[in-house]
Image 1: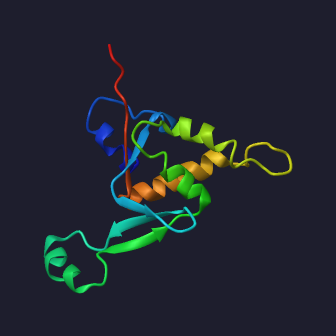
Image 2: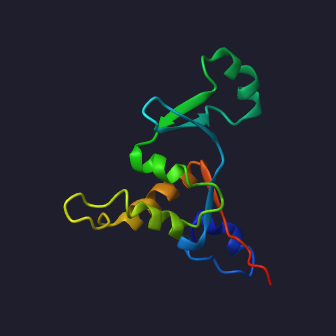
Image 3: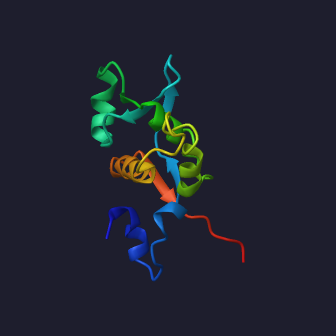
Length: 132
């Protein structure tokens, strides 16, 4: 079972479908001059390194510049948009210029992108509990 769903495996709950999860960022970001998102990932997590090494560095962050599609998705990682909602919003701006149809394998690209961000602890997922 994937590490993304490890908290569900410890309980009796089954993992919800990937499309029903709500992603949210765990790190800060800024926008560059081309309106692309630049993720600010801390260089070190260990307290000793943060205390002794980071003050000597020019910046405490590794800057990761996203492309147009990555920036589009990152702006929707607010914990309020389901992955399925983000995918639906992507169909218009990322349509094939000739046919006007959504790009091939757009859902696979989105899933791979989000899983890669999660693997590097840049995003996490939660699921909304419905009111009963």
